[in-house]
Amino acid sequence: MAEKNSLLSDYKQILTVSELTLQVKKHLEKGFEEVWLEGEISNFRSPSSGHCYFTLKDDTSQIRAVIFRFMGRYLKFQPENGLQIICRGRISVYEPRGEYQIILDYMEPKGAGALQIAFEQLKEKLKKEGLFDPAHKKPLPFLPATIGVVTSPTGAVIKDIINVIGRRFPNVALLINPVKVQGEGSSQEIATAIATLNRIPGVDVIILARGGGSLEDLWSFNEEIVARAIYHSTIPVVSAVGHEVDFTIADFAADLRAPTPSAAAELVVRDKKELARLIASLSDRLRNRIVQVIGSEKQQSVYLQKRLPDLRLRLGDLHMRADDLKGRLAPRVHHLLRLRQEMLKGKRVRLLLRNPRLIIEDAFKRLTLSEKGLTNGIRLVFQQFRQRFETYAAALDGLSPLNVLQRGYSITRLLPSYRIVKESRVLSPGDRVNVVLGKGDICCTVEKINE
Amino acid sequence: MAVKKFEESLKRLEDIVAKLEEGDLALEESLKLFEEGIKTSRLCTKQLEEAERKVEILLKGEGETLTAAPFTDEDA
Image 1 (cartoon, rainbow over the protein chains, first blue to last red):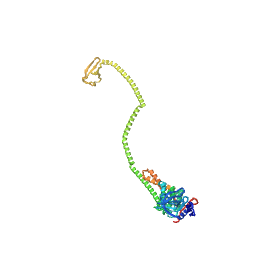
Image 2 (cartoon, helix red, strand yellow; image 1 turned 90 degrees about the vertical axis):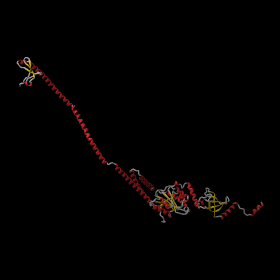
Image 3 (cartoon, rainbow over the protein chains, first blue to last red; image 1 turned 90 degrees about the horizontal axis):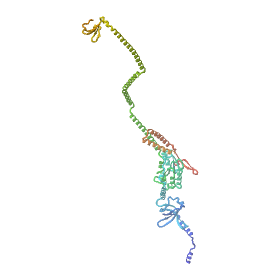
């Protein structure tokens, strides 16, 4: 104890932990105000405070490192484990733990540029989120009436765009939303400009353009805020940043990437002359076609007309045929007519004959005749009766011929008919006659005729 | 917007020409289409001339107001 006490007595000053730590801190901070350090990041963590804590190590040693939020904001890349970095900082001591650490104000990835790393990292992240999804890309309007342009109001880019558009389609409206295209705050300005044009009615398409430059110069177009503004734009965005070989995050997010600002103008606006030619050619085709259609219809109708038999000829044929038939028909008709006429005549005659008047007349005639006949008949009957009476009377008289005969007269009768012969000339010699005498008769033969 | 109208008109014109060139249409329908086509082509030509040539630049006014002013390139 005593020895220890004597040892203590050698030292005039006894420090507290805090005092020592403070002295170490002073020494270290003074001795390592600016240190460039190279190492690999491990144990990286970034609590909600926004500061980043990690360990930098090499094969045998390690040192705690911190980068505060307000410095980290300017980092062009996201630190992560395993990344080899080169950084600048100062050494400090964290008194509550007695730990020394390096407080960084700048760091960049070793090997590949920090920007390049940051670019790849952001690209990967946004791709995963779907910001570059082709399905999200909007088609460009066929012919915009108003084109919004987000670019610097000075310089070659805006001039090129105005020239190209003016040349291709003189009467199209351009609305320029001027922005800073590099430097602090430029990405915010660009994002705001895109959003602003989205609120202005009539803007059909947006050209986001910047001339060529280094990766650092173009960096605003690689910022997440710009990519998101493009993604959220309801108006199609055509990006044209830098030269043809430069690809930015904005290009990936845009609906269409143009290799240069002039190319963007050409992509956005069609050539008016070409459009006019297209319309003219369509009109020509329209006219040609209708001429063709009408021509072919005409041809068709001519063809059909030809196929139609000549009606006049046909009519002539029909006339002749009708005549022929008529000629053949007439005699037959006449014949039939005559037959009918005759039949009719006969019937008429028969009808006339059956005329009741005639019948009645006839009947009267016949009646008259009959009456006459009857009268005549009666007269005849009377005559006959009278003749018979006279005959009887004569016969009565004949009785008296006997008396005559008595007186010597005779009656000569020719035999054998006993016809009375009153003249000699009725007799011929040789005839035999009977001669009745007053008493008896004699048969004689005629010897001679005397007249 | 004239834009949409123009594209629609041009599309219609192209459709009409294609339809006519396809053939198989009655004469009457062809003539009807032709008439519409000619009208549409005139409309297209008119619409090409319709838009107004202007180049404006947005200027930030007080607060959030924005005004469009004719753009003149100082360097030009």
